Length: 127
Image 1 (tube, rainbow, N blue to C red):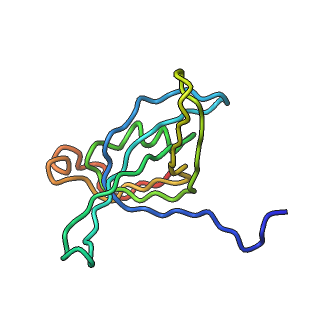
Image 2: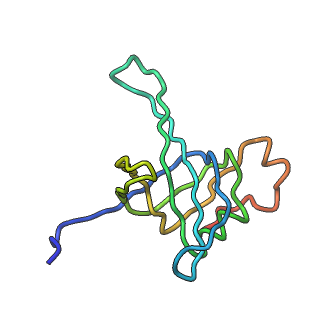
């Protein structure tokens, strides 16, 4: 039985990097992958900015939303869970991947150059 006090919850706010093509998964649902950059000020390193990149996997209607509305540079919120995967590649090398499986994605803001192009989508979108 799972521990009653266990929780796997990830909430991230950052900027969209690369967005993959919409793919059909094994089950009858669509899958989208994107990268999310998060910049933070490091207190212990003299206040220097540090950027980390996270791989996000999106299924179903949130994947459709990502495909239809999100662009590189958009600021989004992601609610999901942390997932670890391991496999052997074609050369027999062990590979590991840590990613976030998104349950919900919200569009917060577009970069200024995109705001001028896409004025009809100013409200936060949730899927």
